[in-house]
Length: 249
Image (tube, rainbow, N blue to C red; front, side):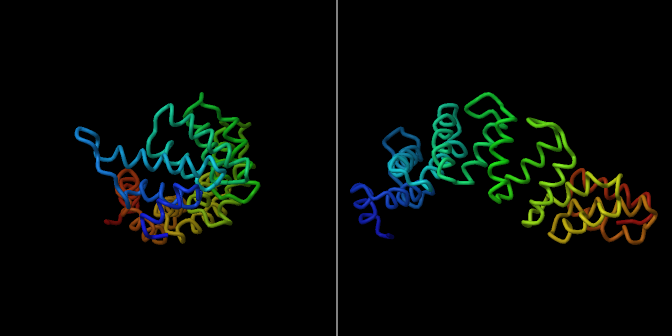
């Protein structure tokens, strides 16, 4: 459905898929509507996007419900739009959409369109995690790690971080390493290695610092030098450790 006129005709005739596609083309500014004199350049196009996505969402098209809610809550964030977005995420979540569950959890955690509610966020994340969503696993692990909305449990935090890591999450093995670093440095090193192998430079810093504490300075050196590429505070930490070892960058 590449022809704009054909797409619009189908959308106006009630085709939900066409309504969604047309709405998203306006949303992404592939199509634009000229503003009236004195009107914001993008406002009429964004209104058209919301209008067509709303038509598709009201017909029960789950993908359109999520697209509309994402647009309202992430791209046009106002209190009123948060509240409307919550409604559409809830509709989509009831139909099993996992992205909607994650967004409901994040909005509850951040207090968007509602008072901040960590226990509610945890329930949404758990529902998504139980259905295999990696971000549900990761976010739930963070809550168990901090004790927000749930009773703090390092064991459960590590459990869900491991589940997320098994699905290839970049940061999950790093967090496991942090939690185990002083209790079990060898296991922590293994998790940091996993994160580093996935390209996380922060893990290189942790490996370098861990090796330095264990007296393995020559082995620590390449990890610390890679960590310098991070810039900012992490780079300063890496440089400080390099100075302690006695090597220049």
